[in-house]
Image (cartoon, rainbow, N blue to C red; front, side, top):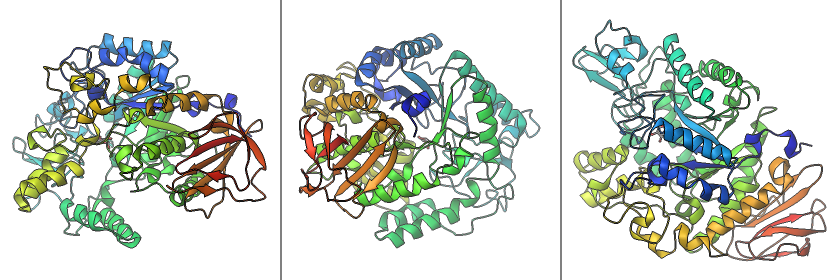
Amino acid sequence: MTQPSQLAWWQRAVFYQIYPRSFADGNGDGIGDLPGAIAKLDYLADLGIDAIWLSPHYPSPQFDCGYDIADYTGVNPEYGTMDDFRLFLEGAHRRGIRVILDLVLNHTSHQHPWFRESCAGRSAAKRDWYIWRDGRDGGPPNDWLSTFGGSAWEYDPSTGQYYYHYFFRQQPDLNWRNPAVKQAMFDAVRFWLDMGVDGFRLDAIGTIYEDPAMPDHGTGLTLVDLQRKAMEAQTDEDKAAAGKRWLAVFGAQLDQPELHDLMRALRSVVDEYDDRILVGETDDLAYCGTGSDELHMVFNFSLMRVDRLTPVHVRSNQAERLAALPPGGWPCNTLGNHDSPRIHNRFGDGLHDDALARLSLALVLCLRGTPFLYNGEEIGMTDLLLEDPADLRDLLGVWIYQTARDELGLPPEMAMYLAVTNSRDRNRTPMHWSSGPNGGFCPAAVKPWLPVHPNHAAGINVADQQDHPGSLLNTYRAFLRFRRSAPALIAGDYAPLQVHDRDLLVFLRRTATQRCLVVLNYSAHPGRLQADPALPPSGRLLFGTHREAGTGLALPDLEIGPFECLIVEV
Ligand code: GLC
């Protein structure tokens, strides 16, 4: 059986995603930045995380909050300078914290010099760096849609052709079938690896290639139709049908076979260095290749993309994922990020949100694989539903608002509700450092780039929770420390017990030197461990939400309190 000492750093690590615009504002202009983040490195070290995933920090006109990059080897001046970046990296490394960057391969910003050169004329040197086609019958080349609304094609009047964009029109897709594109991007990858960054999270990899025949999807459906059907889906069959419909529309734009060659090529670049890593924004385990020739990890999105976390769902997710993992592959679990509702909202029930947040933490830290946390979850930040359309920053929200109001004729309040519940500003608001004005993110007189959630004044902030032993923040700290001391949680295998229980999630994690029983009660009622030949007779409590660590426990028939979490060495 594997021991932690046999694992690589990224298999032992807990990652923490920093969304730089909202994390910490060092210069008081209402926008998070690198000096702000540097000043919080001690906070992160004390929290007990081992690695940072930094969302895009590159120069960008911010049409997609930095996921529209205008220079792959620079730093967004709003966030600081290259020297600030170096200080951030060195400061993290000095504290034993690794740093991976976000790498957006599929597209650049429309303001990237590569795209400007590509627009210069039909025979421009970089014309073929992007995907240009002639129109058809006075309209776009085919009926493909952008996943952010409208046609996937934008007309360029100066050259009389259309360019392809899977995301916003300000994010033209690169033509990865052109070797010069690959060369230029790999140079950028080497630039950061040479500087010492520890790897990359690869953005939206499934979108990099399209079917070269560019067939129409021919369904006649629009994005609004797809979203409406997905929202109306109640039963599992409805949801499966919505998924199929989505694929019928976008299939030719996604997950083309050449991607595996590209991932292998990128892996060989990264492997020229010592121990750098690639994490794919996909839940398709096929991108782990043989387990050592493509990506080091991909996210387990199917764990989090549900309305409620239940023992039944977690068990079936684990059974499926762990069986599909290639030999040598490594799992990776997360429950939230900058694209999805905050954990507190998504997995809360409105009555026991705090208790459920603790179970979510226990889940992600105790399942087999590397956990990824999202900034702010450690203090229980919640979604903020904006009310004023002028506050919308996510263009997706702007598009939904305008479409719902102008094309569907919905009343503005309803259009706004649809916009804020189906876009991403709600989970990207500034971090709450204190109960003071603007949550201590920026000075009182400054308007932050997105409004600060008013609940920062009601205890949901770092300063208030810091010294409060029972706070969510201190639970995160204690749990992260505890995980480092529990080899079974880091390296152990996973064996589910009590597999028909609808309320209790029970599993063992085992290495040669330690066995831990993990018990999570997802119900507001007490549950009971069932006598079972696989259940050890007794154990010692290592960590729990409801009882003193160190207590000896007789396990068969043990009553588990509502929302209790127990980790018992057996
Ligand atoms: C990824 C990012 C998302 C972005 C999109 C386009 O899904 O996580 O924030 O909008 O790619 O780059």
